[in-house]
Image 1 (cartoon, rainbow, N blue to C red):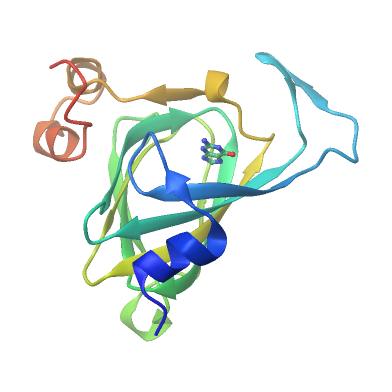
Image 2 (cartoon, rainbow, N blue to C red):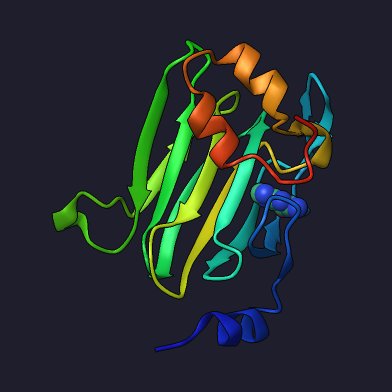
Length: 167
Ligand code: GUN
């Protein structure tokens, strides 16, 4: 079985700001860009994304775009979502549908997301982002802002905020 360290080497992954490792695998530069309220974007981009035993958390962040997540290899990844209506949802992305794991998870733009490796050495996924990813469309979660926006979810918010974010 391919290990986390081998995947990082084989796929040329680099540390991601949110936690874990990534590399962009596709951007639709053969098409005209689409106009969005925040500027012009590729119609679609995609990355490989890996969580590992030593970097097991994708910390809270928000994206304007819709993101499809596809599980490729390894252990399940748990997703925590905070929805615009103030409620929380959990989903597990993995290879075992008989245990309720999803092969594909869609997270619409405007939903806050955190993820963590449920167990084991690594979970390898792809994320397809439409309109294409741009840093200007992403907000990293600050605990105080999230707690004010989502009262009742303090523990969940603090558990998956980046340690460097001011409280
Ligand atoms: N998250 C989803 N797609 C991307 C991407 O293309 N780049 C970065 N840095 N993060 C992403």
